[in-house]
Amino acid sequence: MSKVLVIDTLKQPLDPIHPARARQLLRNGQAAVFRRFPFTVVLKKLSSNQTVQPLRIKIDPGAKVTGIAVVNDTSGEVVWAGELQHRGFAIRESLTSRQSCRTDKYGFPNRHCARKKVLFGFQTGDIVKAIVTNGKKVGTYTGRIAVRATGSFNISAKAHLIQGISHRFCKIIHRKDGYGYAC
Picture: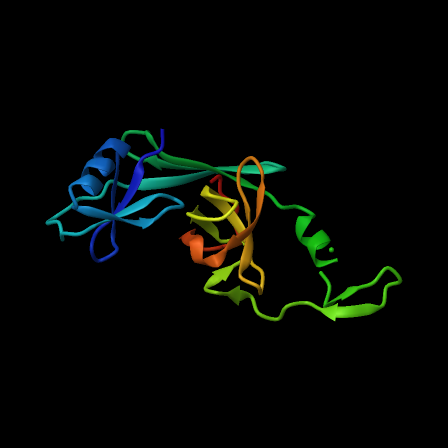
């Protein structure tokens, strides 16, 4: 079981805590969410003389997936665990499906690609929650977005792709940082 990472008001790390304890702190207003991936809470009140137990990072490199674990040195307990999937040739292939302009069926350029990366405060790859209150697509959707200059975004949810969600309904959960997270 992964524990919840904790930092104090000065952003100094403290001992990780059980998820139930983190929920209590959040519910009582003694802490706030600092980051969602990995889930980290920040204490609102400066705590006095906190002793931090030593932690060790253990890495298990593999061909396709690298395992990462944070282990308590004194007790040997696993505090946090995760997997890092290697992208392999995906980067090289992406640099070759990259185009400076779109082409017609004969290979001649006929329109340009967008120059702006951030549109309406969003960037392709951000994880968002969209609460649509009116129109054909009423509902709540969570997933990665693909931004469009028109302001009509596509959201890749777990099960399917939802197209044509207005930027007005979207709220950022986590900014794009180059890694893929399970939503």
